[in-house]
Amino acid sequence: MKTILLAIPAMQSMPTTFVVCLLDLLPVLRKKAIVRLSIAANSLIYEARTKLAAQAVQSGMDYILWIDSDMVFTPESILQLIDDVDEYHRMVSALCFRRTVPTTPCICTEEYKPYVNYPKDRLFVVAATGFGCCITETKLLLEIGKSCSPFAPINGLGEDYSFCKRANDAGVYVWCDSRVKIGHLMESTVSERDWLKQQNDGRID
Image 1: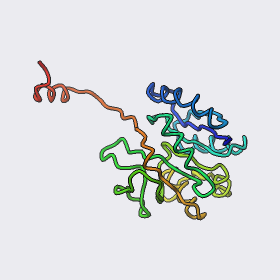
Image 2 (image 1 turned 90 degrees about the vertical axis):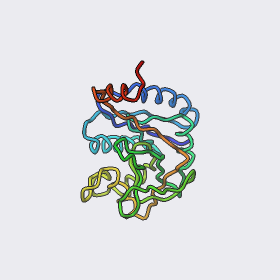
Image 3 (image 1 turned 60 degrees about the horizontal axis):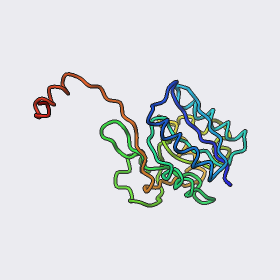
């Protein structure tokens, strides 16, 4: 069986919707793999991921399943992602979308632009992906993080894209599985403008 560190970077609290997804996932996941759950509460995402990566290496886990605490998913979607990884597909991401408008895919082309016309419902190569929901081989951390943390930002890139760039430079492909569609929780604020719009739209009796 695969050994997996379920790595969750989070703030001091987590949304209820995410917690429900996590509780649904754990018993299903533990039938398929040996799983260790680790939550790193840190407002600095770079430091949280570095801490979780070190735990995976120290505990000798085969893979790290990264899930951010603002994602929405089903157990079936995560199991598909786990089935994807092998000796050739060493890093695979789910298909996630940004929660700010425009809500472009969290995957990019070689120019680090959003990969908007991505292939549908299959595995395909991307230049980089966000780490909202992805799985990486633990050995990859050792290969690309010899001189510094594999998440150390490079030339203005975020910690996730910096990891992917190092993987690419090491000759490792980054994959996305567009069959695995994950939700991204959004925050919204209700104001008088919303109330007036509802009245104008005739939605209030």
